[in-house]
Length: 276
Image 1 (cartoon, helix red, strand yellow):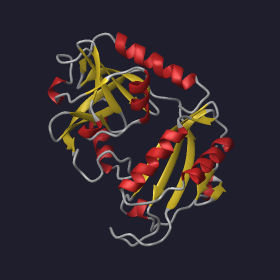
Image 2 (cartoon, rainbow, N blue to C red; image 1 turned 60 degrees about the horizontal axis):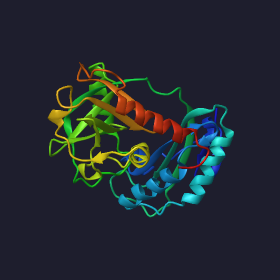
Image 3 (tube, rainbow, N blue to C red; image 1 turned 90 degrees about the horizontal axis):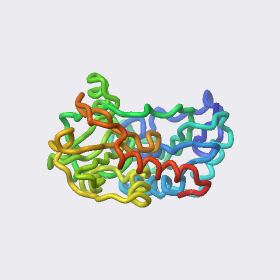
């Protein structure tokens, strides 16, 4: 168990309540971060709080008191009785009317944590028939408006896949529901640029910074065994996760040599005791 932080208070989970009029519940008007809890610390906390601030600003919310949220995260982590899990930070517009208009009231801030045993070693993915709008108002923001992702993941699960992959409106590879995508083509590591509409993932950034790679558009039609040699997903909870199949088609040796190297680099980052 871990305590839950709600608007300045640390509470037992059964006592942690939020208003039924909160705009995060009513219309999904908020931003959030999922942070890895590992060995009693919140991994890459500074990067996550910076992104929370950017997402809130992009929504016209905020400012986020990142110092106060950081202290709340540390307090929740200190109360956790498990060493591996996820921390969820949610920042919403706060209580408002039962419609799209916001009130002038204070924002809501919630920090919660739960144990997590980690993801599967390999991933099976399915490309969904819907596209990300790289020019949309929410493009690149990590918001609580997640119904599109929930629907896409349900589509993938119906096809025995554990992650869904989106193209954007230009029919280029974009991202997963909660992950970034890397591919290897002609031995070169590639990933969609942020301009393609994908989220600026924390793990994505660490792989690019420490391992290297090229940000470039990739036609979604090339995302398969005929167009690439390897592929992997990155996210806070997946880390670097090799993709074994795309729409039921196997990708050859998994993990491939480039994926294996990227995973080893990321594992070394995880082993550091500093905030990367």
